[in-house]
Length: 486
Image (cartoon, rainbow, N blue to C red; front, side, top):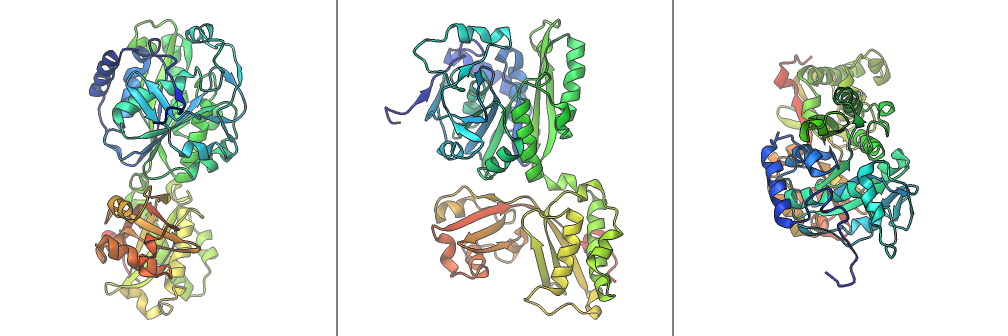
């Protein structure tokens, strides 16, 4: 650490959580030990509370417990501003944040994010009057020689740091405090900073100072609104972190994430007083296509793929086939997908779209037609082949950069059999589905063949200008469902 590096010192240690290291360790250990791991795959974000630990710590621990043991190198913390009045989202310019557990480094990506609208670097700002009495000690003790910024006294980020230090000790953070913001623009900008090894923490409590039963009713409605992506019912009155929550929902929509509530309590449950309580929830956002597509969805897509090809032999256009469809809700979301055709176990065509561009059912129909008649590697499919081919549909997650520097780290981080890989070299690009690992199990050979598929030399994947992205798939074949081939 350079002696000139800026360190954001703790502002609420001793107020929101213990200032003594041993006491803080014991408290966190107890909360995390009492919490249960639900083994939810593909977690990309969590919502957790930011009140004093004696009130909200048990709920926050249930969210952080789900991140234990994950390969996370960057935590992006999105938090509401309680004290500062400014426009946009302020990115901390500190090199480290400090708590009684020590220092945690701020990622270099924070500087890059602050250069993109609507994100702004940490700057001096006006201080708003405290909304709740618990905040007033911070403002009363404000030293005159301290320059107020959105991060100076903000507890909504600080209280997350000890949990992160406990659960993800190797991770770096990107702390972002939010006032008013364009959710859509911010989501698009922030999305480019996400990798497979990034997790988002959204800091928010729920309703404030209502009687116990009313609080439970209001909080239930807010949690349902979050999990159902109902923006209109998420308000500052019912969720103080409504701004970062809505930004997270936009990110989830871009990436096809789902939401699941895993815990709810209020201060009446944790601290005893039920006259005026504050609500807390833990919600995880996860990327798991397998849970979205049921057996009927898969059968539907396979039948649609074959119907599209068969109809083409009769002169029917894709648009006409699609006009007759009545897909379920799971199939109307935009998804990347591939349709693969095999004949006698050998590849006969494979076309797809890596990034979401059409509703899934429409993408399957288009790619089925393209795989049958437009794959330049093979002659167009003939009618007499139709009973002998098998169709496979692969539905993709949104590709994310593999956070690796140099060939060795790329090889270390690739997961054969699980990762689909996109290789970008300058303007050239190629992909292999995870199924290709069955034919090419060696990582180096896999990347060399992918380089050649992109029209580049075999070792081009090692170049500094090469970019590796990975995705995962849910793949299913006609033979798995006993579908008739005709």
